[in-house]
Structures are given as C-alpha cells and as structure tokens.
Length: 469
View 1 (tube, rainbow, N blue to C red):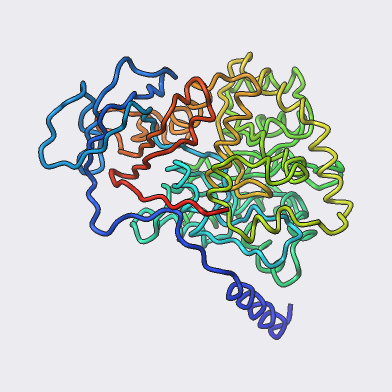
View 2 (spheres, rainbow, N blue to C red):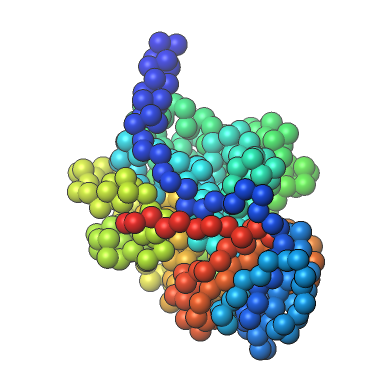
C-alpha cells in the first residue's frame, strides 16, 4: 500500500472511531475503595469438589486476599461488611477463550468498531475476573495486559497469546481478508496473525514474539468450511510448539476436524480450542487426546451464532442485554446483506455439526479428558462476559451438571492457566479475593449465575451499571 493510501486508511479509521458513541462504563471502582470487606451469610461454592460447602459462613477479605472463612458473626473490626442474604459466593469466573479486541457485531458491519475498555468492563460486569485472550492485535494486547495489571485500566486479570500462528493464507487470515474492508485489512492481518510456510519460519516467528512474553501461543489448524483453506503441517506445528516450550510458553490449537486434532496433538500442542467444530470426533482422535491428557476448550455457543441472530433479540439472555452496546444490538438484528459464499459455507457447516459438537462433549468426558470453559467472545453474537454464561448453559445442556460447569469455569480453568499454584479460582484462605455473589443456587440451576449482586476484584467491591436495552 502506498503512503498516501495508508494515510487515507488511517484517516478513515479515525473518522469511524470519532463517530462511535462513547459508552457509559458498565463497572466502576469507587475512588479510594477499600480492598477489605466481609461478605456475611453466604453459601460458599467449593470449586475443587463442585459442591456447596455446608451451612452459611462469613468470608473475610483483607488487603485483597481471603483472610478467613468462618461461621456467621465472626468479628472483623474496622472492615466494611456486606449482607449476602444467604446467596452463593463463587470464585470469579475464568474465561479461557476470548478476544478482547473484537466485537460481537456481524462481520459485515463496517461502522461498529471494537471498544476494548467496554469489553473489559463487560467481562467484569458478568463476574468474569480472569480472561485468556486467544488472538488479538500485537503488540497492543500486551500493552493492555500491562495496564490492567498496574491498575491503569479496569479489567479482568488478562492473559494473552497475541497473534495467531497459521499457514500462509490460513485461518483466520483468510477470513479477515475476505470480510474486512481494505482500510482495516492491511492493518489487522499483519498484527493479528503470523503466516508461516516452513518449520524454520515458525521457529523464527516464535523467537521474535517471545520478548513480548506471551502467556501462550495460539495456532490455527483448520482447513475451513470448504476444506480448501491452507493449514499447518505436523512438522511446522512441532517447530512452533517446541520453540515455545524452549521459551517456557505452552501452546493451544484451534482445530476443526478429527484429522486436525490428531496433527495438533502429535505436533505437541498443550491444549485444543474447539472440540472440533465441524464434525464428530473419531475414536482415533479421542484416543490421541486422552493419551496425552490434552485439555479441550469446547466452545459450543459461538457456533450457534447464526441461528441466534435469526431467532431475534428475544433469544438473548438477560445478562447479554445488560452488557450489549446499543449499536451492536442494532447491527446484530438488522437485515444482513446478501451473504458471500464464504459466509454461507461457514453457516452451513456450523449448523450441520450442531449435534455432533454436543456428542463430542460426551465423548471427551467419557475418556477422562479435561473439558474447559471458554466463550470465544467477542466473536459474532458472543457478548463479552455474558458469553461465558451462555457457554456454561450450553455445557449443561450437553451433559455437565451445573456444578461441574461452574468448576470448569473456576477451578479447572485457573489450574490450566496458572497450575496448582494458582491464587484464584477457588475460595480459600490466602487466595486472591476475586469473588461473585449471586442470588439463588447456580449449582442446581445454572441460570441463577446471572443473578449477580456483587463483584469483588482483588478485594475491591465494584459498582455495576446495566445498560437499558
């Protein structure tokens, strides 16, 4: 692209950004807020055992850490308290498949730009206090990770992969080139992907990324809805994963079929994103996954997006409407333009594999494979934060109990990200005070998870502000 064309593109981007209406924040932290609080008369979710602890308790938080879990009435002089009214206290939710720099608006919508700050606020509003971003603009996402960690920006604890490693012309580069307008395409593709052709390309790309300290490497191994999209071969997968391991970084692979599952696991990836999305797992693929005990982030909800749009706004969960930007809602349910063949192919294949994806959950659980919870938001029709609530509901529909789904989104996800030393994902003395208080009992009715009365992040009670959609 010429210099003049680049200037025109930047001007177009700035114009679009200026035209966007700034959203009122979904969450705020009161200035000078205490990092100590007592949550009284609560039923504590025992995440490791996926059950409610016996009786009601008081949970004492001091300086951002859980200091005590005690019978009701424990003395805590000088610390403000909140009456939990017998509600359920859970660890903050953890979403291990997100894209914080994207938007739930349809891909054909040009004027609805991503709003990272609003997305981060939506995660917190929905009680998601830790997020793994599995593909974003680089190095912007690493800068955002730092600003959240230093409390310059308000958001969930952020882990980040950065760009997606893929074949030349592979997923998601082919989708971005097909769906983005030219003035976004040139900017986004080079920052969101690393297109590699050989094992040496892969090793060099990983080595170039390691100074940014990615928390995980994301690979895309998917021939797409028409089976003609280029994808990485086993040798290149192995080169990327080995280079990551040499730098102390694990990898996760987006996969679409059983054959891609087998190549990914044999290439050394540490986890899989999708279960897969295009078909039912073969017995061989299940055996390969189970043999390596490779965790799978199954992501059911994101592939139902087209059907949800056709169902209309009434299909949205209340918590989705509470976080949704008005411009995104308008775009989502407006009449779409005539679909391209690429869009039509994705919609057809995703719809045809709906039941197969549910059977994949059953197969993975029967084989003892760890099933993790991720929303893939903000993708098309997947709202940040609220999308994890939708995903948990679909996991329950696929056979998990509500308590098992909650354990996946807390204890299991936390240990996937941070290992046995994770200081979040459970309510225990000494752990970080990332907590959500809800009315009802989500361990028996997963929909009760949305009845959030309090969100606590690092010991601070946040103020939540729903949108009047």
